[in-house]
Structures are given as C-alpha cells and as structure tokens.
Length: 195
Image (cartoon, rainbow, N blue to C red):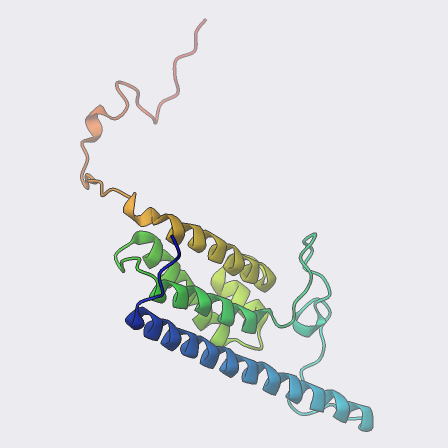
C-alpha cells in the first residue's frame, strides 16, 4: 500500500484554494504593514515635533495600544490580534470549502456563520479591538485568536473522522402536550412540608 497520487481535478482545486489563501494572506499582510508604517511615521514625527500628529489618538492606559495585560495567565497582549483573527477565521472557511463536508452539516453551518461574523467584525474595526470584543461577545481579541486556533484542531478531527456522517436526524415536536410533562407536580407551588 503506497498512497495513490491525487486525482488531477482535486489537485487543481487544491492549487486554486492555496492561491486564494495566499492572496488573502498577502492582502492582510499589506494592511498590517500599511498600519505599522503609518504608526511608525507618526511615532517618528513625534520625536521632531512638540505637536502630536493630527490623526493620532492619545495613548490611554489599558485600552488599545495602551493595553499592557490581558489579565489572563498565559495569554499575552497581542496588538495585532485583529488582523490575525481575519487570517485564522478565513483559514477555517477555506478548509471547510476545500472539504467534502456537505453544506447542510450543522457543524459546517455553525462554523461558517461564526467565522464570517467575526471576520466582518474585525474588518470593520481594524483599529478598535474593544469594538471587536464587544461585537463578538466571546472574550478579548487575544482569546478570539486562540478560539480560532482551537477550532482548527477540532475541525481537523471532525474532517478526519467524518463525524457529520454519525449525526442522525431527529424529529422535534413543535407543540408538545404539556399535560404529561411533570406528573401531578405544579411548578408554581411550594411542596408541602412534612411535620
């Protein structure tokens, strides 16, 4: 048993996926570089001028670039967490797109919705990590990056084991009969005390 070479069509699809991923990484890297260059220029200008740059906001301790701690042991501050979120959540979407998991699999639906939402929140608020945290409502931006890394590990297991094939459809009763739910106990009343 030597492994068989990949089929030409799947190889072509994989090359196209890799090209898309590389293009997204290059675009995101350019955004990071542009923001870093702009901030470096502002910082350099500050050395030669008593006036702060027009677009520079004051450094506020604990917020944005003034953040020095996450308050979480083992989770350092990452001032580039928002662009990293975009890269990592896009990688999740790309991996799902390249997989044979059906679009109707609930795991895929959930991951795609969460990833797209978090990418949009990050893209619309590149310079405002607190706004990204507020919109995502799942921790600090550093934690959101960790969550993307962890989801990639789960997705690898999910795809390797083809777990979507194990999920069986269930019937859900939309208007259940509540008369037989709890026997003769009325939930609004306190039980009788024994004397």
